[in-house]
Structure formats: C-alpha cells, structure tokens
Amino acid sequence: MLCSTKVTKYVYRYDETGLPEVLGLIAECDGKEIALRAKNAVLIAAGGFEWNDDLRNSFLASETPYACSLSTNDGTALQITMALGADLINMSECWGQLTFKEKAEEQKRDRVPANIVFERYFPRQIIVNQKGRRFMNESCSYDASYLTFAPFETYGQNEKTNLPAWQIFDRKFVDDIGFNTSFFVGKMDKRGVPPYFVEADTLEDLADKIGVDKEGLMNEVVKWNKYCADGADLDFHRGEDYMNQMFNRMHDMSLPFEKNLGPIDHGPYYAVEVATNTLGTCGGPKINNCAQIMHVSGRPIKNLYVCGNFTGFGGPGRGYAGAGGTIGSGQVFGYVAANHILATKDNQESDEIISSASVSEPAVNEREDYHLEKDEYLGSSDHGIGGKLTLGALC
Ligand SMILES: Cc1cc2nc3c(=O)[nH]c(=O)nc-3n(C[C@H](O)[C@H](O)[C@H](O)COP(=O)(O)OP(=O)(O)OC[C@H]3O[C@@H](n4cnc5c(N)ncnc54)[C@H](O)[C@@H]3O)c2cc1C
Image: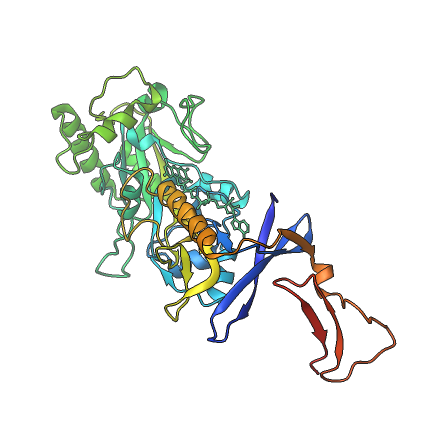
C-alpha cells in the first residue's frame, strides 16, 4: 500500500469506438512521479471536491466557503475524471454544517478541518440574521441547518436573507456550558470566550457592535424568552424531537432528555458569526449499478470504478436521509465494484510500480549522436503501462 500518494493522471487509451479504457495511474509519491499499472481496473475513492474553491464555487448551489473533511480532498481526481469524459450528477449538493467563521478562516489557511458549531444544541442561545430574526430550529440536523442559508431577498440588491448570521448567547451559557472551537465536541471548554466573540453589557449594544437590526434583535429575544417560559418554541419547534434532546445532553450526559429551551437574560451578552461549512460534496461521476463510471456518451468507461463521496451517488438530491447514508453507500459500491471486477477480468497480470523514468526512457538503441527521422523506429520495452511500449519518432 502506498500512503501519501496523490493520483494526478490516468493512463488510458481509446478503444475502437472512441471510449477511454483506463490502464493505470500516474501519481506523486515521496516527491517523485510514479506510474502504476492497473492489474484489472482502477477503483477511485478520492472523496469530494470540497477543498477546491474553484470547483465548489462553480458547482455548489449555496455559498459554502469552509470544509470539515480532509484537505487532501482537493478535486484533482474529479478534474482528471472529467477530462476522461465522465458524466456528472448531483454536483450542486453537499452535506452541510455550520462553523464559527473567524476560526474557520484560520483553520482553512492551515488546511485543517473547520470547527463544527455544536453549541447550537444547547439552551440560552439563538441564531439570527441581519434583521435580528431567527430563521431555523437551531438544534435541527446539521444538513437541515445548512439549507436555511440558501434564500435570497427579492428586493434591493437581492442580498442573502440569512447571511451574515450570528449566534447570540448570554453569560450564563458561557459559565454553565462553555465552548468548543477546535473541531469536534468533547467536553465543552470552559476557558472563557475566544477573542473573536463580540461582547456587550446590553443586547442593544451587542446589536450595534455587530451591525444587526437593534429592534429586530430585542423583539426576537423577548419572544424567545417567552417561548422558554411557556415551554414551547412556536416558531421553529426547537427541542421537540428526540435528536434535539439527545444532542442537548452532549455537554453533560447526566442531564435528562428534555427540551433545550433556555432564556437569554444574564448579561453580558455575546455574539459570534456563523458560516456554512461542508462535511463533503455529494456530486461526482455518474455510475451504473456495477459502480462503473459513465462516459458522457452513456457507456461505462472501461476499467474505471468508483465508490464513496467521489461518486455522484451520495445524497440523492437535496437533503440527507440520515447517519450512515454516506459511509454506507461507499462501502456498498466498493463491494459491488470489487465483485464486478472479479467477475469480468482474468486477474492474471501482476501488480507493478514502474518509475516514470522507465516509462519515458528509450528502451533500446539510445545514442546521443543519433538523429531520428520521422516514423523511424527507436525501440521497445515490456515495461509499458498496459503492455508493450514501442517508441518511435512522430516528427
Ligand atoms: C466530521 C465528519 C463527521 C462525519 N460523520 C459521519 C457519520 O456519523 N456517519 C456517516 O455515515 N458518515 C459521516 N461522515 C461522512 C463520512 O466520513 C464520509 O462520507 C466518508 O468518509 C467518505 O469516504 P470516502 O472514502 O468516500 O472519502 P474520504 O473519507 O473523504 O476519503 C477520501 C480519500 O481520498 C484521498 N484523495 C483525495 N484525492 C486524492 C488523489 N488525487 N489521489 C489519492 N488520494 C486522494 C484523500 O486524501 C482521502 O484519504 C462524516 C464526515 C465528517 C467530515
């Protein structure tokens, strides 16, 4: 097994019908370019394209600047597969999530996964837009929370309705629960608020500092506090379902299952900007039921199989069916691909790594003082990818 090895090209030829037939791969390994001959076929499981700004901006339907997956998912594999003529599907979708924007900027620069906002599952906080209004059940599933950032206004400059967005909370939240701004929730961190959180003694001052409509925020917090006192969020039904209540216990598993409602009424008050973040993109090459990548002509590309987030299979359209919907399909199509390869190939050739030097070097008859004429035969080698390599002069 080769680790830390990045595939940069396919080695392929066209069959008599003009369809690409994949023979192997070119990859970067330890600073060297290597060529890998495919024994029977190539199975690509190179994840999504979420760390490639250009691809994300071109394809995703909603603004999604950050990713909480591996930064090696940089879209190179997708680009070389597109160059083969692969058909694509579901490219506008990703599995979404929320992040603290300023921290995520720093994490993106360092190419580490963006933090995930788990604090939205707890009491004493709400998420509001520039009008100071809530626009979601803050404790909904992560993918559903992401989808609430899609709408645009239908007047003026057609601004995004819910971006920028701010999480608002009070001092009691900080003291009783705390924050985790690294990546994933473990035990909540009670070392106080990070420097990029905005603090103010009153909600009015907080609204001024973050440029949110003051009256809108005041009205929303008064309404939220009443919902908490009455025990029901009449706008977004926060805390009513099992998942909301289960995540509410993540900062303290001894808590009972109960609604995660809690007023915002102990100053000072805080705000932190939240932004959209993705676990991975859903789109990619279209596949058939044998896990083969489909060519734009409607036929499978020869010897090229795929599974996992790299396929366009994940997330059948907008929305996320539930946990395992990602890893599950990756495993199933990996299995399907392996079975199809075994059933259709002779499995005779040996695995072989060939240095790129041995691919490009003339095999025999090399003479520095010799000048080739057009179509003149130079030599041959049995180390060519996909079989015998013959070298000749084309011009
Ligand atoms: C924080 C988080 C939590 C999650 N929780 C769950 C969960 O609870 N349940 C669930 O089902 N799913 C979950 N998922 C989703 C799940 O992790 C992914 O669906 C799954 O990892 C996808 O597997 P994959 O092998 O397709 O891609 P990845 O796991 O992304 O792996 C892709 C691999 O390909 C490599 N690669 C990329 N480009 C190249 C290249 N050119 N050459 C060589 N290698 C390359 C990358 O380095 C990486 O190792 C979660 C994801 C995240 C980020």
